[in-house]
Length: 149
Image 1 (tube, helix red, strand yellow):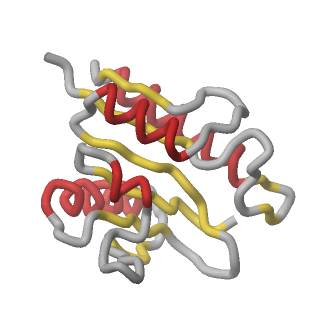
Image 2 (spheres, helix red, strand yellow):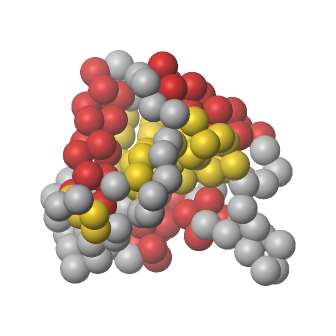
């Protein structure tokens, strides 16, 4: 059985995400996600993406598609707004495979020359994962903030 990865390219369609320096986050996210897909498929990994063009998808659609696919891991690709620097990867607050995935992704980004802001967790006011993607995906999942626009 092939290893399976779900890649969510954040934003899309009429939801541009962060906009800075002439860039729209939705476009940058899609380029990164497609590059990740291509590299994973080159290594015989089965990949499903929420989008491969500039279309909008809802969080509910993304979660349903991912959980139906039954991946081994899932990633949500984003970029930060504001005046910061570096990458950060969020994982489930309980750690586990999601934390290992976050640390591995971050290590590869650092090896490519990106600064690290850390592998992190974030809880909402109810004490659950802040990110819907991490909270609702059945597989170990992460939210990757690749850089600042």
